[in-house]
Figure (cartoon, one colour):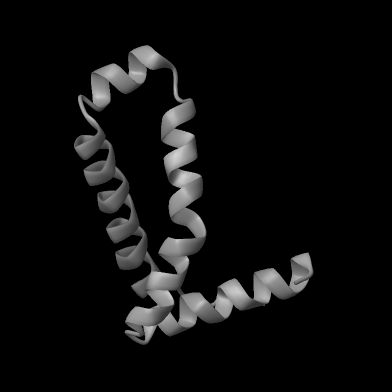
Length: 81
């Protein structure tokens, strides 16, 4: 897909999530979960050690972030203009 097509598709996914479509949320998780894991792994070691004591804790934090994203998607509004 082109960048523009990707952005439009992500907007459609967000709208589907807002409508309660679990499959759309699962697709967003599949698209962005690996990026979140990569980001957490690249954090400075001291930060990671302070925040995340184990792999399970890392996954809990990532999952909590994804759940928060899902909740925030429900509150999205169309920007004016």
